[in-house]
Structure formats: C-alpha cells, structure tokens
Image (cartoon, rainbow, N blue to C red; front, side):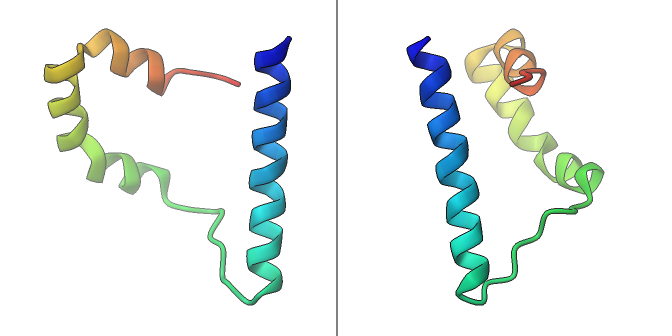
Length: 65
C-alpha cells in the first residue's frame, strides 16, 4: 500500500513538474521516435547485461506500471 502511494506521488510530482516547465516556456517532447532511442541505447544495454545480467535488463525493460 505504501509503495503504491509513493508511485502515485512520484507520478503526480512528475506531471506537475512538466506542467510547470511548460508554463515557464520549456518545450517538452512527448512523441519521440522510440525505435531510434532504443537503437541508440543498444550498446549500453549490452554492457549493463554483462554487468548485471540479461534477466535484470529484461525485467526493467518489460516493467509495466
């Protein structure tokens, strides 16, 4: 119960923070090219898998909140 409340609070803070940044004139990108982003991160994922294990990387990448 506490973890769920903390996640809700973190999401609210993130949303409010983004709204405040927009209000102050910052351009916030929400529609990014996910494929290009993932392709750019492939070398990092390979290194992290060596260090922490592929199972951990998969768990993080497949996490649904």
